[in-house]
Image (cartoon, helix red, strand yellow):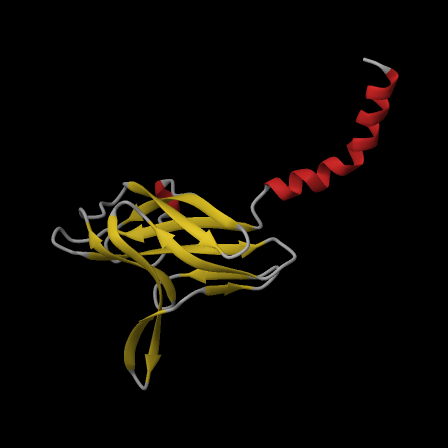
Amino acid sequence: MSRLAALLLFALIPALPAWAQNLAPAVEIQQAWARATPGGAKTGAVYMTLINRGADEDELVAVATPVAGEAHLHLMSMDNGVMRMRPVPAIDLAPGATVTLGPGGYHVMLTGLRQPLKDGDSFPLTLTFAKSGTQKVEVKVAKIGAMAPDTMGGMQK
């Protein structure tokens, strides 16, 4: 190796950590899971934890999966004792924030399921963020009625 090439290499070494950090997605997706559905069900829900590890605000703006005709961001809330579910255009992620999508709150609503979601199966989900681009995640299916991912059954932590 020539001296010039060696000098260039040594000059670039301090920049490698910043370059590598830019390769990692700013938003980390953990424990993506769904509940199993009964045979004739046409709807389902996906839950997960989103962690914004970046220095900028971001938003989850879209979701898609081949297991359903449509996938939308939703929020379930209680209003004077009445459960309400409504679509939301995005889920905000402040810098350093952790947002949990779970039963009784934010979730991904699946409509037009092409087949039942079965306990132990998994399926792909694509998430689109306003600034961080798209990420694909594998969604693990837990038991019907589960309130949390089945960590004993090998679901990701």
